Image 1 (tube, rainbow, N blue to C red):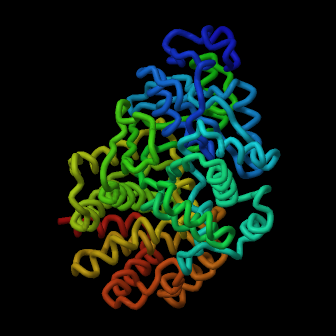
Image 2 (image 1 turned 90 degrees about the vertical axis):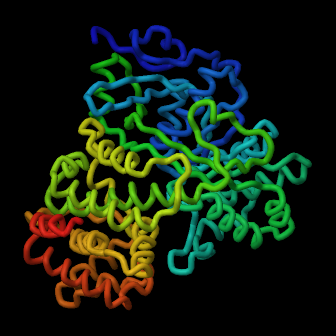
Image 3 (image 1 turned 120 degrees about the vertical axis):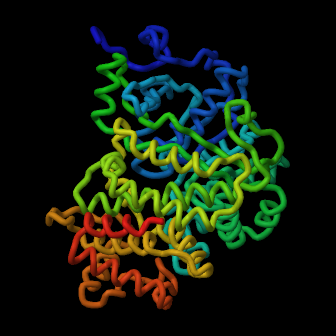
Length: 496
């Protein structure tokens, strides 16, 4: 580009032809939602759908006020404020073309550590009908061993003693709802958009546990008045890199401190369970259903577990990106086998979804070379993912007496990955809350092949299944002796 343009309200009309931009008057927008956790995924997904609504359907009262709770959110506050809360969304298509649009649905942003009172009052504002969340799995403060609320958390203990100066999401929700109750205002709906099965139910359970300790009377009011719809979200959104910013500047001339990169595919399925008014997102492709469970199960067991299969294997072999694994027929062959033979038979009926078409779309999405989704990202925090993404399929197949080869391979490759070196001897860092115990048990598995499976907080009593452990031990031994490629060849030969 001959010149570059910093992204802000003043410059928006100077953007090059072909860049979509807000066609609505942002000065007339009112925030109807507070969103906590304004990362890449929120901005590629919920904020994108909301922008579509503002742009195409004349809606003005459903803009978003962002909130950051963590210290690292300060950078996002500074970046967004410097460009009037605008940002670029870059869709990388499989054919290689990039379409860019500027999103304007976020109109404000509060950094909670600087001014918790402002965040509480914003959530208590009667204009706010929804408080939505993308706070990652760890943000829900679930004790992995008991599946109950973790009261040992120091920030939780602080919030219980300092309700008007909270640090956790539960403290903010509790105090803002207390003020709404006192002011005789209706409660807001709490909408979790995190990639957790039954995310609304989890949010409700954790908030009620906290609130029952903090204020039992308020807890009763929340139970009666606050709605927690479950939803399923899907859009591959890799981390934004300096290369992403450079690509945007080179191709569009836009200087943007916080652009977002994502795939064209986008899906959102929500239970229509809101306290009063909600955005008419169905006008822009969101699917409202009575029960999100079958859609969640489909996505988590096919997409997320499939991602883990590719991630562990790809990391061991030395691939850097997920698309490299999918373009290798041995990896994609096992992915197909896993989805067709082990996952599909134990899924529920899914209204409106063609499963064969859905699975094929996953392979195409994983194979998009322009997304550059890093294998390392897929392997992050696997101790929180595998119990949700893969174990339910294994347990269902154990009940059914069905095949387990691919699932056993995924766990065996995770064990081998957790040693911290790939097959060429290159070291990498394990990014996981349980990294120390994972690595210890992975290394011990060279002597005791079931050591990794004995991590009860991850695998429960799976180690007691003789049928599974026999398959797992053989697979792990094959990985040690033959390596990833030979294992994949043998597993693909067993395909029906």
